[in-house]
Amino acid sequence: MKKLTSYIIITFFAVTTLALASPDNDAAMTREKSAWQAYKDRKTDEFKKMLATNYQGLYADGVVDATKEVADMAKMSIKSFSLSDFKATSTDADTMVVTYKVTLDATVDGQASPGAMNAASVWQKHGSDWQVVFHSNVAAETSATATSSPTK
Image: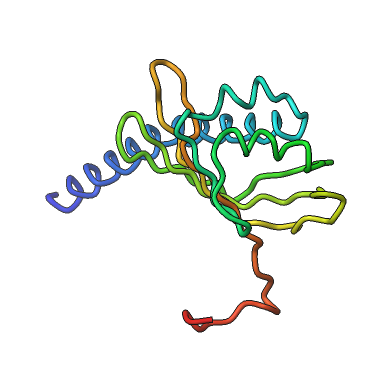
């Protein structure tokens, strides 16, 4: 009987944890998709509102602030994007770290951008609004280019 009670309690906590985590994950994914959509549609005012004043982006060509991130919109043409393997982790009530894969059909300064990338963003709640304080994405390696060695 003790085993059965233990299983019931463990199951209850596992189900409760999953139920509580799902809305945060869904809300975070909605925010991230909205940011990508605003960028794709070149809605600079809408996109600017999503960036915190202390925003930093980290890319292969360097670190950018909010002003440069918005200015770079003019260089990029996104035809389509999709997000997958989305995971949101709440570090506290006002901070959310999200990781995911993004698949793009896009060009940067007329050159094709990597089609598949791994991405991460950190969102913080400022007042009643969530804003991005950090974002980064890197080209995803294909199985042909990936190596099992941690020291590439």
